[in-house]
Amino acid sequence: MSRPDNYSIEKTVWRSGRKNNFGDELVVAEGKVNDKFSYVMAWEVQAKRPECVSWNGTVSWFPRMFWVDDIPPNHIKICNWPSGKEYYIKKEKNYIEMNGEVYIKFNEDENSHLHHPSFGNAIYNPSAKTKAIEYVEWFNENQRQLDIYGRLLSTSKQAKKRRRARSRKTDK
Image (tube, helix red, strand yellow):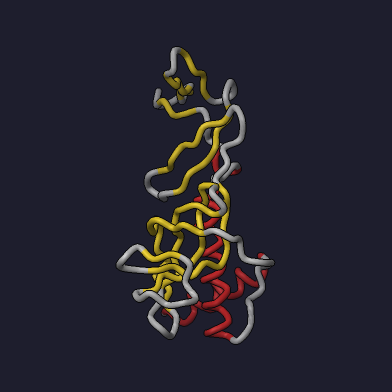
């Protein structure tokens, strides 16, 4: 895969906490890739190095992957504030628009009379920012397994159950 011609990264929007041997941190940054608004998985570097594509006077970024932030037609982007992740919800199914205002349908829980938004399944339609964050989390977990065990651990239900049992056994 060749690198796109024009990166213009503006700021870091999410930090993974993972640093490489040079002290660079793996982050999700926002900016433009070939004049399209995108989220970029990049190493945030504290100096202006020649391999980096953007410099804002303080830090520069060395990109690894990017996700273009295109909102599908008849969708809006919503944010789940506790996780910092964003999702798309569909018009008519989850919200209506009248006079430029967006109205979201709320469902009432029969037992507690608690109202909650009708888009409970929004996590199945993640935005570009959420895809970038989830990819970096997956990438970091795989790297952690390679560093500790020298291989990737099995993701089967039985293997997870065995690891959980072993960890409980050693905790006591």
